[in-house]
Image (tube, rainbow, N blue to C red; front, side, top):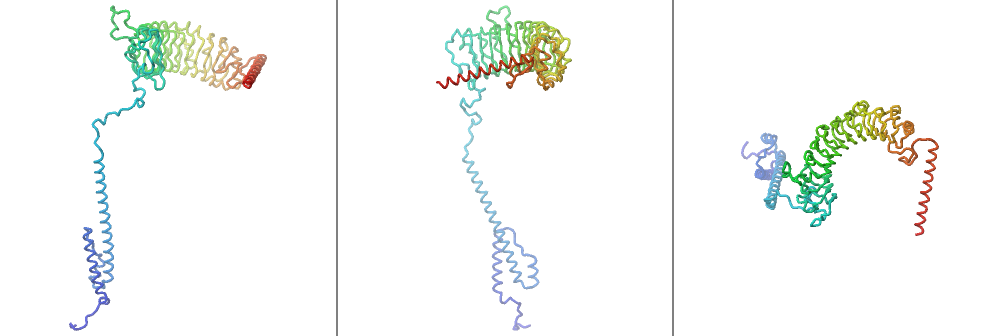
Length: 503
C-alpha cells in the first residue's frame, strides 16, 4: 500500500474524532481533580484496558470508563466533603469546650466547708436547745418551786440539760421531769442537792452520770453531810426508753425506792445489789439473759420485779425476795415455772404470757405446784397449755388469762371448777372457744364468773346483745331492766329535743 492510497477507515472514527478528543480531555481533567481531592489513584477497570489493547473499538468502552471515573470522582468528592465537615465540626466543638472551660470559675479554697443554714434546716437532734429556750424561767428563781416538768413537743425538744441548770431552778427542787426530748447527756444534776425524783423518760441518753459529783465520792471518814448528793436523796429514777448499756452507776443511789430503766440496751443486771430500799424495779424490754442472784438477793424489800421482753430462759435469783408481790417475766424464753418457794406467802400477780410453757413445765414442784396463799392473778396467755390442771389447787385465783393456748375440749377446762373465787377467765383463741355454747358451758363449770374474755357475763356484749347464762328468771329480770333503761333514755331525748325547739 502506497502513501497515496486511501487509508482504511475504522467504522465511526472519522465522525467521532472530535468527540473522542473532548472525552479524553474531560477524562484527564476529572482524573487530575480526583488526584487532588484524594490520595488514592483511580484505576481503570481491567476489562476496558484489555479491549483497548486489542484494538477493538473503544468509543463505547471509553464512555463506560469515563462514567465509572465520574462516579468514583463524585464519591471521592463527597467523602472529602464529609471529612472536611466532620473536621470542622470537631474543631468547632473543641473551641466551644475551650470557651466553656474558660467561663467556669475556679473552686474556692473553702469549698469543703458546709454552707450556713437556718435553724429550720438543722436536724432536731443536732440543734442546741436548753430548758430555758423552751420555757420561761424567772430570774432569780422562785425558791418556792419544788417541781419542774417539761414534756417535749414538736419543735420544742430540749437537746442539752445544761451544766448550769441549777442557776435557773430553785435550790429546793425535788422533782425534775424532762420527758420525750432529745437529750444525749445527763448533766447539771449533781448540783441539785434536794432532788428526790428524776425522770428522763424517752430521750437519747447513752450513759448514766452526774448523779454524784466525782470529787465527792469515796472520801471515807472525811465525807461531809452533803457529799454524794443528789444520788443519796433520790427516791425515784426513771430513765426508760433511752440507749443505756451500763446500769452500774445506779449503785450510788443508796436510798432509791423505784427504778425504771426499761427499753434500753442492758445485757446484765448490775449495780443494784446494795440498794436494799428498792421496792419496784422495771428492767423490761432489754437484753437480759440471766436473773443474777448476786444482784437480786440483796433486794430484801422488793415488791415488784418487771422483766418482760428480755431473753431469760429460767426463773431464778429471787429466793430471798420474801416480800415480792408482782413478778413479770412475760415474752421471754421460759419453758417451765420454778424457784418460787420464797414467794409462797406473798406473791399476788404472776405474768408469764408469750413463753413456751406447757402443762408439765407449769407443774414443777417449785413452781405453780406450790400452795400459794395470795395469788389472785395469773397470765399465761400464748403458751403451750393443753388443759387447766396446773391451776386446780389455786383457790385464791380471781383472774385467769390463758387465751391463745391449745385447750380443745371442756373436759380440759373442768379442772378450774373448784376455783370458787374465780370471777374472770380469758379462753379466747383456744380451740374450745369455737364451740357454739362456749360461754354457756363456761358459766356452768364456774358459776361465779362475771367476765368471759372481754365481755361481762349477763351484761351487754361487744355488739349490744345480752350475754351469759343463768336461770330464766334472772334473764327475764335483766330484760325488764334493759327495757326500763331504753324507755328512760327515749324520754330524756324527747325532753331534750323539746327544750331546743322552745329556745
